[in-house]
Length: 323
Ligand code: MN
Image 1 (tube, rainbow, N blue to C red):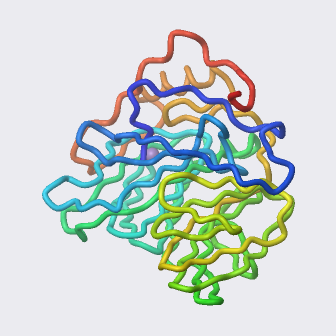
Image 2: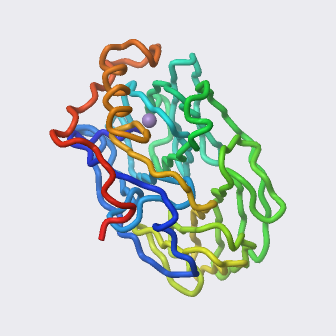
């Protein structure tokens, strides 16, 4: 997935001032973003005007469910990333990933595609011609800490993730650890990403880490999170200081739980780059446009995405949260 906006807003994220130091319920409304001229409609809840990160999670796009019969489905041409990991997770459908390391990987529901950009990588994502009609999933970005952000790019596919079941709820641990289950996916800061599938009348108490901040996103149905019904659309930010979290559902539901140690560094995010300064972003953009640093993505039927023009005013720190 790419940030395909023609005029992407620069956003600064991170820093302890943006962390709620107690349990809270903060509803973060998403905004609708169209990926490409006839592309996929996504609901973007991070970065949000009120809150830019949850742990190291810095970007959350939720798309579908949509019927791709008679359309091209998802078509995201080759584009670059720096300083982040992309976490691809499907509820329905198939997506084919290609990258400049030569990876070619079909992802299906319940599997994880994890791409660590490090100092730079390029990739494309497409609906394969032969596929289920319905498409539904999320793409998430995890910011890399400074000590890892210039590392070698690499790609992981995990087809079999650990989890647990209780009270009619099946939990899959996608990233990090939850209860006694630990994902094999490589993470660079303490965090968790997990999916809970709730049957009608089910409930569960999840063990949380009080030092983590958390947020919940409903992917399907309605899930009662800490007593608050949460449907598709907004993200419910839960703050820190929690040892447990209650989930329940009267109807079948599906929920994504994201959390992590509050990310201490400030970021500058622009288009598909995560950096630390205006100058870095300018250099990353120039390296993509000159075709020198990211390598080629082979096999995608279409041209790479050009970067949008830089904004006329410099990208500069403007505080950790918008007022
Ligand atoms: Mn991407």
